[in-house]
Length: 429
Image (cartoon, helix red, strand yellow):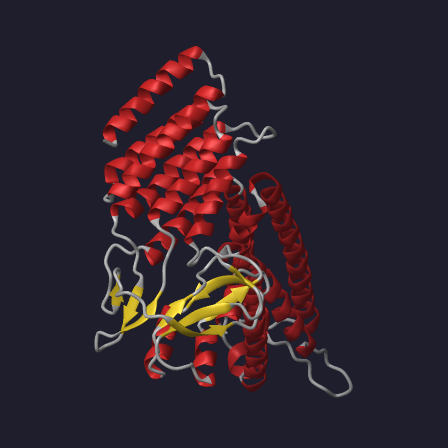
C-alpha cells in the first residue's frame, strides 16, 4: 500500500484522476438538481434562462478549449522534463513530476473537460413533444470554472518559468536533503528511541524479501510493532537506498526462536521496495541530488562554477546542523524498556566525505569551487561535535590541497589557496 502511495505522489495521473471523479460527481449532481428545481432556479436573476443551442455552444467551447490547453500544458511540461534531464541530471526529473503545482494544473484542465463532457448530453431542444431542457446551474458553473482556469493558466506559465531556474531547482533539492536529515538524524529523540543499543546477541534467523529493487522506505514503527507482537529482536539488514534482490535478507533475527509466517509477513510489509530511489528516508540519495547539481555545473558543456558555488552554500543549511547533532538513532525499545529493533543510518562522516570527495574529483580546475569547498569545511569544522569527524575534515582538506597542487594551478591562485587551507586546518586543530 505504501509503495502505491509513493508512486501516486510522484505521478501525473493520480491528481487528475481524483479531480476527474469529483468533476463527474458534481456534473451528475447539478444536472439532477436542475431537473428537480428548474422552476425556482430560473426565477433567480443571476441564473437567467438560455436556449438549448446557447447552453450547448458554451459547454462545447469550454470543453474543447480546456482539452487543447491541457495538451499544450502537458507538452510544455514534457519539454521542461527533457531539458532538466539533459542539463541537471535524470534523477532530478522526479522533482518536477512530484511538483503539486504541475499536477494541479493538469488536473484542473482535464477535470473541466470531463465536467463539460458529462453535462453536455443533458442539454436537449424541444422535440417530438419533449420539453427543452438546459441545466442552468451546470452551464453557469462551467463558465465559472473556465474563468478560474484562465487564472490557473497564467499561474502555470509563471510557475513553469520559475521551475527551470537553477536557483529554484537547487532549493527543491535542498528541501529534500533537509527533510531527510531531520528524519534520519533528529535533533532530539522521542521516547522509545536510542542512540546506543546494547550489544547484539548472535543471529539465529532471518526474514527475506520477495521483490527486487531499491528500498525506498522502512516503517520502523511497523517493525517495532511486529517485534513486540511476536517477541523478537530484529536488526535491519538493509536500509533506504540499498538495492535488494528477490530472497535477499531484509532483517536478521537476533536470539530467540525462528519467526513465524505471520511475523515474516508483518516485517515484509514494513519495507517499501520500488524501481528507483527516493529522498524521503534515503539521505544519501538526497545528498547525491545536490552533488549532481553541483558537479554538472562543472561539466565542459556547462562550465558554470557559480552554480556549484551556490550549491555549496545551500548544502550548509543541511550539513552544518547534521554535524552539530549527535549520531542518529540506532535502536527502538518497547514500553518495558526492552530493545526490540536495531538499525543504522548513514553517519555524518560518510555523508560529508562523499560530498567532499566529489568536489575534489571534479572541481580542481575551478579555484572558486576549491575555495568554496574550503569555506564549507571551515563551517562544518566549527559546528562539528565529534573528534572523528574533525579528523576526517582535516584529512579531506589535505587531500583536496594535494590534488589541487598537482593540477598545476596559477601561481597566484595557489598561494592564496594555501593560505586559506592553512587557516582551515588551524581551525580544525
